[in-house]
Amino acid sequence: VQTVFAPRLCIECDACVDICPMDCISFTQDGEEKELRTRLQAPALNLTQDLYVQSGLKTGRVMVKDEDVCLHCGLCAERCPTGAWDMQKFLLDLTHAGPGCRNHPQKKAA
Picture 1 (cartoon, rainbow, N blue to C red):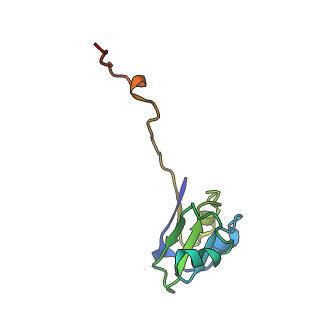
Picture 2: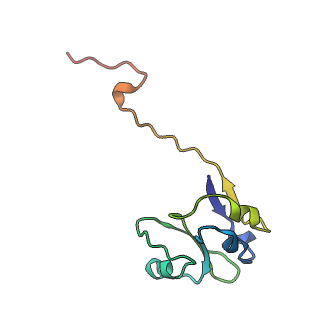
């Protein structure tokens, strides 16, 4: 399950910020990533994990979500009065088997 944010629907009421059990959602002024990480509700310390940053809010601020700590519980989507947050399912299908495990005939070495 992945959270998807639609800034055109957001009224910046902070309901999602208040309900988040991990404090991973923040509304703040935009800036360089290094400095932005320090201004979040809970500072994003894992530098290897990307932040979900969405601009286009009416006040000029950005919504920032630290994906490293998000539980994808859906409380933000349930609490949002305008439907700016949505929880969407997706399927990631990866092949982990090598050529010898696939369902096609293999050429034999001469």
